[in-house]
Length: 360
Image 1 (spheres, rainbow, N blue to C red):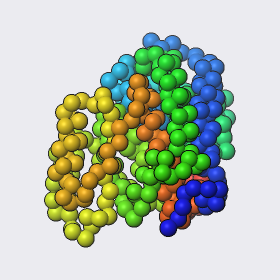
Image 2: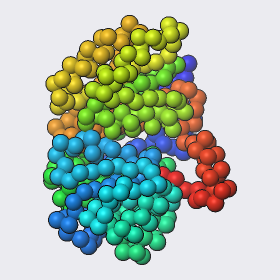
Image 3: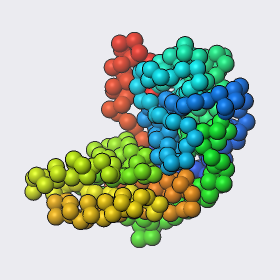
Image 4: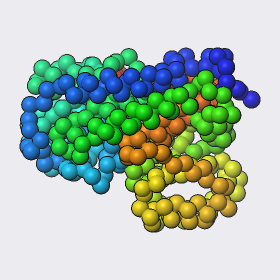
């Protein structure tokens, strides 16, 4: 059985992703300063609706922010993972182009469409064509430090989006929430990092509990985006299938599927319920009752609640736990969490047909 403590435990992390999380508070500071400094050329009152364009680790920032503040947003906001903008996008739509690499082909395609429609565009990027070509087209660009795996640059994409939402009147003031969230992230680094032994490290304990299982992650309302982030991190970091279900929707369909679950699969699925103390009372009850109903088929669920006063802090409390746990699970599975071979192979195939290779 693999150990997670001691310097030798990190030998399988060739890109240093686990140690890279140590810089998370600094990443938030740098990203916040960059977003506050960028010059915006249009007033908030010009915006009627918002589209966040991105893929993978660059798009998840939009999902997280929208799910955390869904009941407090002052404009309709949609996250688009596609090659086409919705038909309603026009000259009063704020289009936020999120691509860490700056070369994500889907996002660049949407950028071209947004300019054709004379939309109000802002970009968040670590370089590439998005930061160079579109800056010359008059698109304000929030610069992000490059050189990371896109999935490990979440905070560098998320914080600028939060700052832009506040500056452009899409959300209520978020400065105090960002301050608290930074403290939450710093606390996570101090309590979940690799130097904290497994008996005192919740992330290492969670990873151990998920060995030899396929995670099924439940989210609802403010934790919907977090559930997707956890799934993505288990996929890319641990090379493990993982799946997401959202309440209350799953109680109208998916719950029935468990009744016919083969007995030999009952030990394979591990349910993880990501909860928030501010969720609707009926959603909280649905978590409880659904877990009780499905326990005979799949066993007890791991129920985890984010802590913090603000939605952003509670969200990032869960995000950091999932990020660390997925990396530790990779080590337990003897998987190097850095390379993403299947994505690279797919990009090579696409590049051979004339499309660009960069993603994220």
